Image (tube, rainbow, N blue to C red):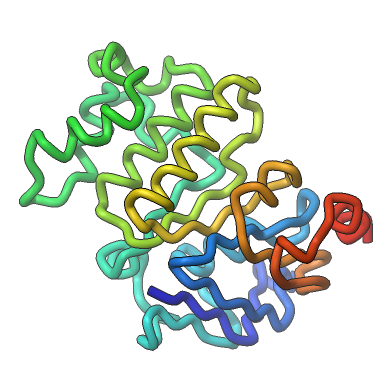
Length: 230
């Protein structure tokens, strides 16, 4: 699977947010989108998922133009999304929150597989999702995305506001999903060290434009921080 973004321009009302953004993500090479708060990372991911419509440019998934496709079609095509707002369905129980996104032909086996990935959720199935901790909510959000059977998982700031021990668990899970299951990964992240460990490719955004891109192996930590300081 390959995701291609070509010359994307996006505005919030009359305010431009993205300027001529292009990137390519292959399922075999996880990609991190780096940048400070407010530079356009969430706008880019929301546009890829169809939550926002671009003013110009296009988005291709395996060669198919999905620029005007609604979010549910993109999900069916293999894109799974873990948004920055991880609350989801606060009044539903954890189990209900998981079952509501399961495809009609899903069975208990798929739910059990996700609970095996996030065993901490097993003891919380009857608890309202809105009462979970930040780390538990993030695990639930990723579990929900996995139940949609994605081929590429898109995560927006998955470690924001989460204690270090849970961050380590989430990192380990993402690595396992990519290496064991061949899941493509796109991650928007401010935690540079984590992003560089997880990804093989990087894109740096500043003021809505791409200011750096390439292989993470060629980007040292100091250089990454310098790019983010632009």
